[in-house]
View (cartoon, helix red, strand yellow):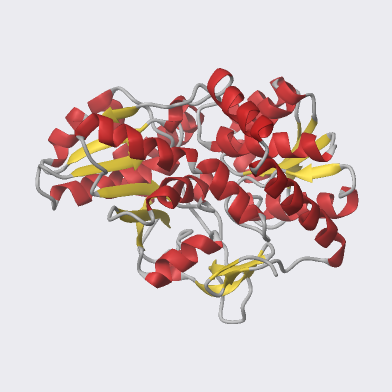
Length: 386
């Protein structure tokens, strides 16, 4: 029975993919119990990825907020510049364990494509990445990085030319090449076992937050904040903290205006099936997948991981939407206050964290997962300022 989070999750896929999903789950469960696999994962996470990433006290941003302390989990410092490395490394090792010599991936902001290309190069695997043409234009530096790393980048012109369409194209490829290819899905979405696998590999974020916060200020934080597109960096942050008393806040893309639904599936969507799983989805009255819009390519997705849907319904986590203009403002705050250029994705979380800090006493601690760095977004930010 495919794993579910309450009513959410499952595996709504063509029959041709069922054997591949069964093989993937079997391999994953075997690898989890294999000390050699775990040792290699830890070794490469350290020597190639640069883990652990630091927990940084944002003193000047805290002063701007005037309330609770704001700390940053610096996933922007992992190899490649984003949390995507964690999952790409784990799944790349699973692909090699299954004897698959070809990796395919989808990407929106380009960071997952870069991470997959890096892992493909390191493990000697052929790598091909699907990316919407709109995202290729606004994330051109990452397209060049993928190509330099030896990956083939396939432009996707269908639909809106964004992340949803890239996933569609990658799934079509996988259906046709399933015997030789592993689809290295980049977020905590899709059919089982992908949401569980991605959550496990990304949970290194939350595990490090647990011991680093105790070392830095003697206890767990009061609030953990992360941006949510498909939801991988957020579920990696939240998962090890679910059984604690830490409040969990996920931040979605609210889009350019109050009239827009942006890409806020949990705030403005309703249950539906997208890319093989039941979760919250932005859809029209007829159940057709709705168009999304966000200044952030990595959050520009009409669905969300099923575990987030369950966390929302159960009340264990709270989710809000932040508009483009506020995310851009938070981008500049961190740049000017701390000398750090954040990606536009976590800039949404930074805005929400500052807003939360202003309402809390100074003895509380907020940890924000800074899921990526902002080099890739400089042109978008400059264009927005014109």
